[in-house]
Image 1 (tube, rainbow, N blue to C red):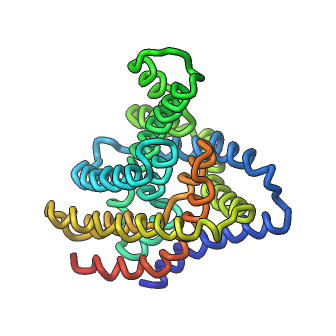
Image 2 (cartoon, rainbow, N blue to C red):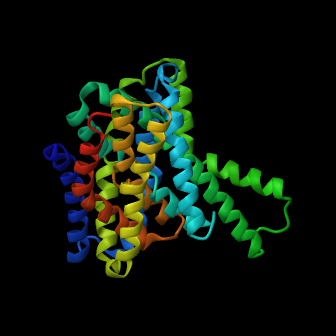
Image 3 (cartoon, rainbow, N blue to C red):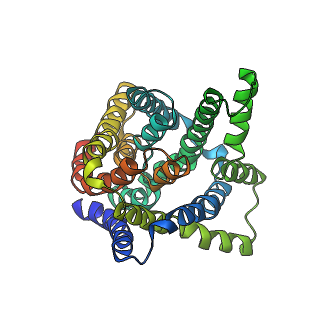
Length: 316
């Protein structure tokens, strides 16, 4: 069991370490971080999201566990955001960090080794809507927060509240994250496979998203005062890899879930913070240091917490 966790987490730690060394040695300068962030956020992430969503079979999804999973996510998201000053940019990004799991790079190999094909079916069902629900909702909330800040600062002129909301929602959808998700889902509804040339191109671009994002986390760590953020990173990591899965376990049991479905839902909630949260903190220029530290800290701590969580769900 520990070997499965170790095999899934070590590559993530190594990518972050590579980025950290690149930053310390000066191979990647601090001035390059915004450009690398834009490359990841505007090019690599849309390619990954569109290709992933274009192969989703919506008619085959079991929405009951999905609904329960995201009900718990909603509760944790609101609790974190409200405890950090409400639904401003800072609170929303921290709430996203407390709920967004590294499902692809860590979740897939871990669940495959621990639960086999049956577990992967449950995980892929969650993955198919994980980014769509969390990243799209976070984007819209962040755009609303930005609109409120602009209005308060007198930068947006006088607009009716409905117009402000509609403009923020439009910007939230016509965005590098939700837009490829929506377009991918629409393409999936056609039932057509992607043309091989396009699919291969998207595969190469999308495949670079996770390693580049994690290297970027390491580079940013090299230029951040992590020591000053350690307390906040430990608190945020505890929410993500301890409180979130415990809440999932409690609600799942109360609602009658059991077996591999509940086991995978709990383990998915227990995964460390996904690197996309780091990209959001960079994009909206809020909580960058604490989120950067939290991605690294939660990944390292997961070497201990994930085996314990796997032991806890055995026999459910």
